[in-house]
Length: 231
Image 1 (cartoon, rainbow, N blue to C red):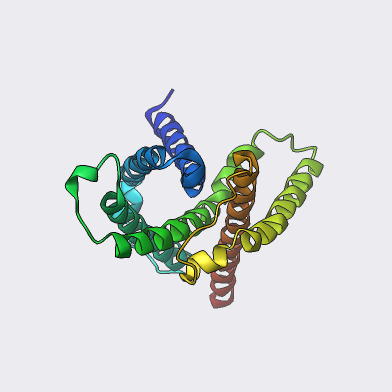
Image 2: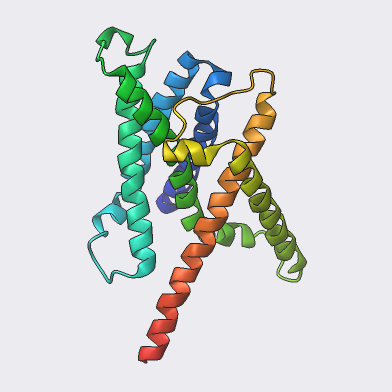
């Protein structure tokens, strides 16, 4: 196995692990605060590792032509960096287990920041995944027989169904209120099975992956169309 192939497998593994942790972190009340803190640390470590593995892209941010697609990708990445940093710092301040001995203070402000940034992390990271979804589709397409295009249409229909339900789950789970900071406290139904909770959040993630993917394709098409006109 080539070095490039090994690095690609590591990247996919890290990103998959981050996706799983992101979903679990959204249900902190159901997994317990101590587990939430450990998962948060794990998420932060994986986030740093993700940037190390993608350092070539970071170095090339200010190089080359600035297209709408690159601008969308870069702004999303910068916002993720900001919200993840705020989540990590506010999480350490709020810690009751791992960093409790630090006694950093400022719990009220930290709680507001942690909640707001936590939900924006979820949305922005889902969009970020959507931006790179074409690469994942390309990898999966190699496994689909070319003489069976119906499978691609089934996959597209399935993604539309997920995104459609994601709109409902987005509203039902009150994410607009959490993202806007209107609601300062999160309500969890303690009797609800965690599987149902996670399924709704998977659907919401699917919604923003869908939006990120097709918005990125639109921006690429606009750039391609401009290039054709100029020629």
